[in-house]
Amino acid sequence: MSKAEKINIVPCSGIGKAFGSVSRLAAYYITEDDHPSDSKLVPLALLVLGDKDTNETVLANPSITIDGCKLQCARKMIGECGGHIAKDLVVLDVYREHPDMKPSGVAELNEAGEKLARALADKVDSIIDQSLGKNGGSKNA
Amino acid sequence: MIEYLETTVDKFIFKVAKDRFYTPEGLWVLNEDSLVRIGVTDFFQQRNGDIAFVNLQPIDTVLKFDDELASVETIKVNLSLVSPLAGKIIKINKNAEAKPEIVNQDPYGEGWLCQLSADNWPEESKKLLSPQQYFVIMKKEAEEEVKKNE
Image (cartoon, rainbow over all chains, first blue to last red; front, side, top):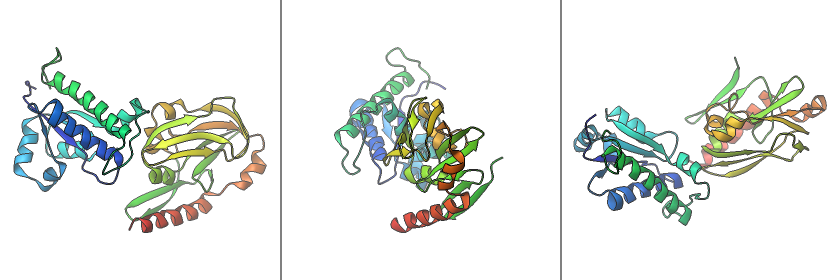
């Protein structure tokens, strides 16, 4: 695959669970703060609706999916649309690496949940850097 | 090949293996000669959600009935699992600690938790439920759970 210009970030769109909220907060950190010019937030709902522009975005750029649970709706939906998945992450796996950051709350995450979202975003940031050929990483997505 | 009792409640399918005993709390106990193998049921893992961590008591721990056998943290709850019988822990499933998702994926097989010596199995097994007895309890709880979420 040739060098990507942007990376799609596709978080969980579930409701009612803290892990989904962590996924979305991490996606905002990435797309609004860390990589605003070389990442793009892709809402899962638009893909499910078959939105043409969103579908084209998914086909044009590699995607990093951040699922809230093991159902992995984001990963499955990108696959269904024929998109390329650069990396599929599940919040629970990242939590296992940071057992001191137990998220709780849904509308408003607790401090540990925010920290977990930050740790998750850091992980994705380094994948983006590698995918885009920054920081001496691979130039291939 | 394990045979199962099976029921569908709402959109969920729950299985109960026919070859072992159960506790009402959702542990299974399988007699294997001088040892018993212990794990959690399919209903237990579906009800409590994806498991983040499994912590098992170390090998050689001597347990009385109702002593903590393991603690499990899922995305929903933290649970203490108590031993359904007295005995010494002979073997633990390190895979369940290292990759807790196997407990969700294969609760009756690869996701077992530990093996105990069961010195008083004939007597203690009488306190356990048959698959059919557990199936009735499990189905009722599953139906109540669905009603609660309607």
